[in-house]
Image (cartoon, one colour):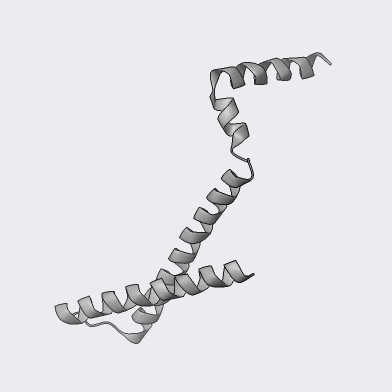
Length: 93
């Protein structure tokens, strides 16, 4: 739970920094930006960062717990041969 809250907090901080940077740039260029656009942009940045961090966390979790090993073994030539042999043995039974 503590890690999830720290990730959400980090997403919020990155969202605020991105929002302020874009806001400063738009004011410097003289672009009119309504409050509804600002809210939508802030929410969009937040959820984009949250999804990105979540997918990266899943990638590391998958690698740490060995879920990628099956795919790696099947991608090698020896792994494909072993898979074909076990699948033909299952069909014979």
